Length: 333
Image (cartoon, rainbow, N blue to C red; front, top):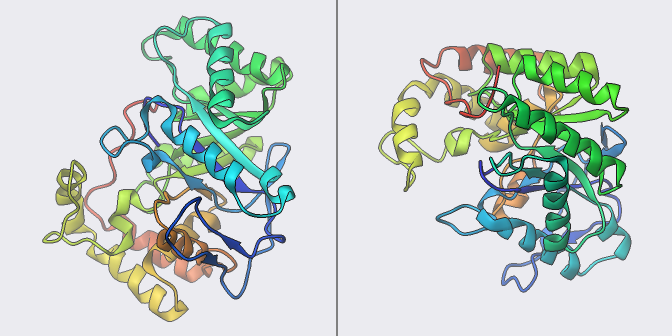
């Protein structure tokens, strides 16, 4: 998800009424569900949602990747124009992030940002309102005002639950305790989490989430595409990702080889195995979706689980990689 925008995530909190999904005015055929549809749900605070959501970082302008709330407008349009049962529309859960811009200095300004998101999506209530990053490293007084903003939007009923994004272990515990004292449960912590991003901080964050009842939401579960198996050192994506891929991909062969081996054995694809790893770790992955084909492929990560031996094989292969994903610069300690 983008660093400077309230980019939303969508989840379905019930699968049973669905038999196809199609984008409004889309030339593509309706999305066909897999033969074994997963009925399980997971808890995020008061919400029961699907074990995987999808991120909308790239739904906006291709250059700016969703600035100015464009992805929120598109998601709202999708929900309004969805040609299905009204109950299904009502069961779509949206989690959106509110940026800690330097001019947002009061709780009221944060509440106004939430109201603006509601207006863009044309919905009455957001599922999870998330603070996009911590300002503890450069503006600690502002952060306290933003925490109070989360409390205010929760108490006003603008959101069903609150969460944070890019919070490191120490700050995560601090905001949990602060919100708890105010009577507001912290339901989620969204961080970069994948087989390429499971360093000491990320695992510590996960352990804290597990102990405090906070749900870990994993963004970039496919390492910006490096864990799809579609790229090689001689076949790089276009744009700024190419520089990062050039640094990391040459050392990923042990991990990619293990992903391919398990995918072949399971009759799955490499991305499905990588996403399923996140689910097995207790996280809710939110891979990006820009096409029907990508949505169909992501669905194949649901309804099954890697074995303990396969998990160990993947994690050992990941540790052989000489480099990891660069952590988000906004993530605090």
